[in-house]
Image (cartoon, rainbow, N blue to C red):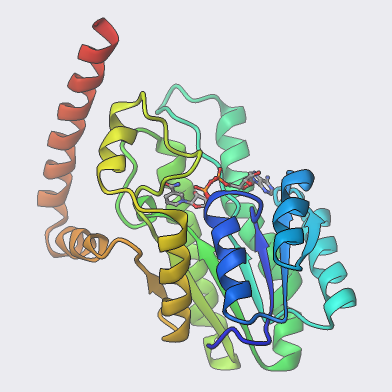
Length: 263
Ligand SMILES: NC(=O)c1ccc[n+]([C@@H]2O[C@H](COP(=O)([O-])OP(=O)(O)OC[C@H]3O[C@@H](n4cnc5c(N)ncnc54)[C@H](O)[C@@H]3O)[C@@H](O)[C@H]2O)c1
């Protein structure tokens, strides 16, 4: 899909990858970019930069997502592309609280369901539409430092796959973006695992470029870090060997972190 003249909604559009997507979509000639975020002030700032429309929305709340879709259609006439990009992370494994797991589930997964429920029927009526999910490489591989991030990002990939399988023949395209480290507020320089991700980190603008190219070619999987394709195929070729490699990596990184904490 070419983005010229398209009406595009981006959740989590006020910062990081989402803000870079908004700017890139505008540069590609989008008719209107709706910058949506729980941070209304920051959303307004990005929208004013690109002659966009800011609509505040907490994606974990279904009524707010429905309002975002309805208000966009009322103002702009249609939605061509809906980007479910907003996401959060919480570090930790089994000890993470149920409240944290629930928050991760609501923001990283249920938000995608709420968006699809609200927008897919409108796209089906028009016979076309494009859904973009910003998942993560953690959704096809894993994120050693966060169980809830790994699980919710796998779920996001599953949701995107399911949407593509069920609606692809009715004109709805789906892309699932799976970056490794990206230089945004997400990354914590004091954390050994995050520093490891940083070794491969790229800018949000690199991710936005890759998304536009991936959408142009209508690829399901968009991998701004090409090495993720290689890691993913190592995983599917020999799952046990891949798990052993990840166990070794985890041991190395947790030892590094322990040394750093002791210093
Ligand atoms: N930065 C990375 O290394 C990285 C790597 C892979 C995937 N991702 C994914 O990219 C997406 C964007 O992350 P980012 O790195 O740009 O982070 P970011 O923190 O820079 O931006 C996230 C934006 O989402 C907004 N947001 C958070 N909770 C929200 C909610 N409930 N409703 C609406 N908006 C909300 C924030 O206000 C913020 O503007 C996320 O889904 C993240 O999981 C990030």
